[in-house]
Amino acid sequence: MINLYNTRIEELAIHRVGNKNKGEMLLTSSNKTPLDDEMHSLLKEYFLKPFRSKEEAYYSFTHEQDLEFHDMYAFAKAIFNTPSSLLENSKNAAKHLYQQSVHPHIRSGELYVCYLTGLMLDNNKVDAIGLFKSEIKQDFLQFEEGELDLKMILQQGVNLNKLDKGAIIFNVEEEQGYKILSVDSNRYDAKYWLEDFLGVDVFEDENFFTKKYLKFCQDFAKDVVLPAEDKKEEVMFMNRSMNYFAKNDDFEETKFLNETLENPELIPEFKHYKTEKGPKYSIEDVSTFPISNTAVSAARKGIRSVINLDTHVQIKMDFTNSDSAEKFIEKGWDEERQMYYYLVYFNREEKK
Image (cartoon, rainbow, N blue to C red; front, side, top):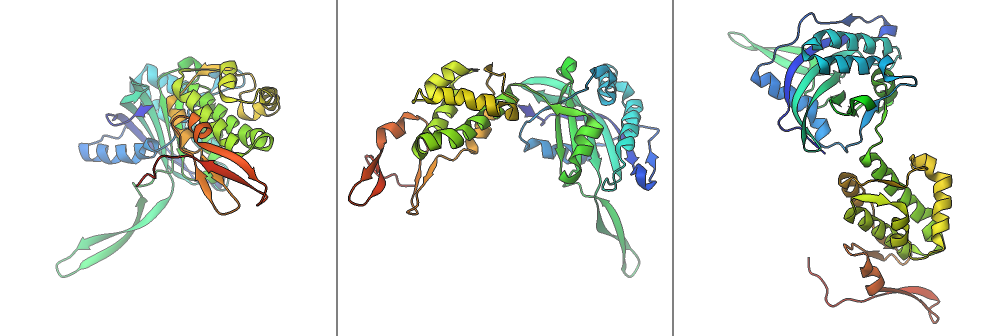
């Protein structure tokens, strides 16, 4: 979990990075950019706003041989070791970005490199490096006041309401390539920012495994539980799964299966499905891991506990206690109508 409220921009360097293939230039600044209070406030909001509403999916620097050969990892490590080296290392980062800016779709823009303090990550205060890029320019009007009239001047500039690309490198997990958050509003060139420039891959922590395992369970419920049982049991399996993740600090697969699969014949099916589909979710060899409450809360919002019937009736099951469905909903078959039915027990109708 991150908290950016008390973040401060301590150092800032700005460079312009063109598209190398189009013959555009790289312009690196000789000095750091000073900030007054007003500019600090504006840039802090511009840089950090996209990260406040972003789901926390972390990345880390990765290299097929050794992280010591990773350019961006080396620049980040040097800055964290000596924050006063930000200007020189930001130039190196700008040169590295310029070398990757060769595809015709890549837009020229300003690269902002800053040293950040006061960030909270998992309740710990940490420093970070911010890398932000503005690309899309917008037209705006300026007015020059004369003695008798106003002169209208058309100019172009950066819209401070929308950051094009950004990354925050947190000074934690150095040996694993740091923990990194990234945003990119222009998805058509995501490979250029994430892979070519940053050189990152998903950081496999408790957030990653919790999110992936719950998504795997959701697909297992749809592909295996639903055909073998019915819609009610599919929904109930996911309710029991969510409750297991919500009430435990650590995941243990055997215990999880015993608590969530009421039909023991589905346990071998689960293991077979995991062998077959596990690599897709990066959980094929995972059977224990710490549970991330943040990932559980995010996953719960995306799971619909609804039974849709072909008679245009919906039964919504929103249970804190997953036993409610077994106690208060029964499924049966009506011989006279030749139709299935759900029988629902209740004491009173809730008025909302």
